[in-house]
Each structure stands twice: as C-alpha cells, then as structure tokens.
Length: 170
Image (tube, rainbow, N blue to C red; front, top):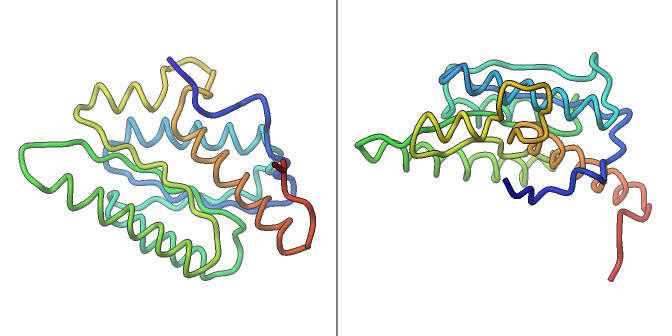
C-alpha cells in the first residue's frame, strides 16, 4: 500500500492537549481508528493525560462535539474519527458532505486545528482496510494519519503565534 504521509518525520507535540471525537457507529472500525490516533499521539510526544476522548452516537454528531471541545479553550487540536459507508440511498452523500463542511467551518471559526479522520467508503471491507489490520503497527491506520496531521498543524499554529520558524522553506 502506498503511504502518502511521511511517517519518518514526526512533529514534536509535547505539551499539546488533544481531543478525540469518535463516532460509536461502526464501532469496530472507529475503535481501531481511535487506537491508531492514540498511538500516533504517544509517538509524537503527547502525554496520555493530555488526551481526552469524547464518544458521540454517529458521524453526524462529530461536528457539534468538536466545536464545543474547541470552544472550551482546553485543546490545541481535535481529531474527528468516524465512518460512513455508502448504501443505496443519498444518505451517505448528505452525511459525508455535512460533516466535512462542519469540521472545516468549526476549525476555521475557532482557530483550533481539526483533522478529518472520517472514513467514507463503499463497503465495510474498505472501511476495515483503511482502519488498519489487527497488528500493533498503527501506521497503516487512517486514525494514525489524522492524529499526526492534527498535531503537526497545531505545532505550526503554535509556532506562528510565537513568531517562530514553522518548517521548511522554498
């Protein structure tokens, strides 16, 4: 499988506080996404006690919970994890579009980085594949990638706020 995320370069996320907002719907998949996200946060240096998990009924509810988490001022980044599987109706398109738009809007309006770790797949088999296999290597898990993206953006934002260099140039 091709890995678009360069996992050899990890952000220094020590001192960050991160919220995970996780859908309970398709629990077998979203729990695996959560495990991958937690593994990524540990690997990047986020302390276990600096991670809070908020379970919501379904993917549609992620947006509001993520927005409320951001508005508390307690979190430097929020990782949104869910799974929407295409069925025979338009429900899939409505949910996927609304959640993507909602997370983007909430992040832009609150200034808190929010990662879109919501799987949108054609089948449960595709969802399971993207959530990673059952081995202990979580780097094949989209939850891992979403968490890394969230903390990398949080470190960039932290550097910008402090007037520090934030990464590679030209």
